[in-house]
Length: 481
Image (tube, rainbow, N blue to C red; front, side, top):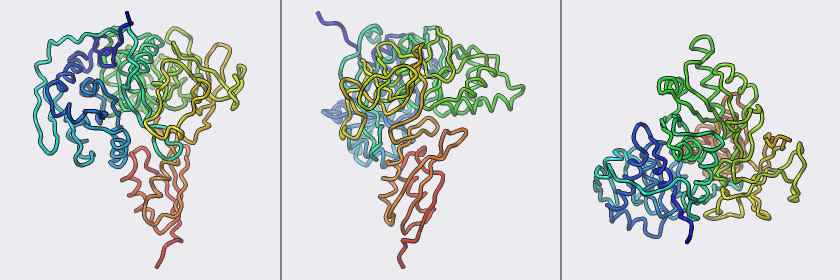
């Protein structure tokens, strides 16, 4: 008899946790109800993938459940309309789960379901006809699922990343990848049903979805969500809701420290925090020290990437935090440091981080040759690190052509490709400009029959807000007339 398998939504429901004060199972049951009560939606999704274009919230769980049985593209709400259209076309999406505000960014003719009123109602719009679907009678519905089983080895989500060659690639993650990563992360972070977690990262980013939400939910924890991060409000929620666990990118912790400093004596002690973790970008030891001095809680660090579902290493709750290091490998994740030939390097020797295990993704939707390389069973991450004797790792930089801004990956060739499509542009070069809060800003140097203002307007139209350059140098010597 084969072992039972699970899907991501059922694993979340089985944990018995809460999302914004409502049972996660209710949010998820609403999604299954939507799929069962809209024949038109099922037809639109036939032999196609789904997509989710939503801020973090309970409705996101509804959308994940309604996408069951097919791969689902997680589209960043900050994406531009051209980026959204390209992802929908590349992944062969049949319908999008979204809300009224974000639906304006969708391509004309695509089927969509508005989840503004989830888990009570949904508005399904197909071929210009909108129907209201009542989801209210899902209350009391019990979803059969277990948290202690492996996930199915079938597509669960697709996340666009790795635009080293100028075009983002859709990384395919399976239920097995995501459930394994969620359980391993929950174990490393010490998650229990007593935890109250503040989640302020986008769910289109796997760190936000898996480590900040799914991991605590499979252990029965409670989630409080912020659709848009604000440092002062985050501190208020941590204090008022007795939050025990907060994850964020380094710029979030830095901005919260600034608020703590302005509010009084630079100390934030009226809280229940036990676990603070940062990822998405390197964190300085100075920031870790300042956070501990202000709160009495260690700021731990993790490392991961989309293609690994996402966590690879985490600073464990039951081990002393080594500041400056990004923890030890999570359960099931093999991590080595290798040279370009694929040879494993000794401790304290800088090399490329290479990983393998049940967390590693299936591949890309298309153009996989432009993405990260899989060699001899190891995924080569394009990141540099050293391994220490205590099995912790310290980040040392990048091989791949990218940098980070507010925890988001920025690929210069993607920005160059977008601006190169602008009429009149002859040449463009993008680069990083170090910034003390955002890690980096973006600078572009453009040659052609263009002006700074219309290059900026073009970038704002073509690129997600976090990819829009802040520094422009325009050489208009190529102008005619």
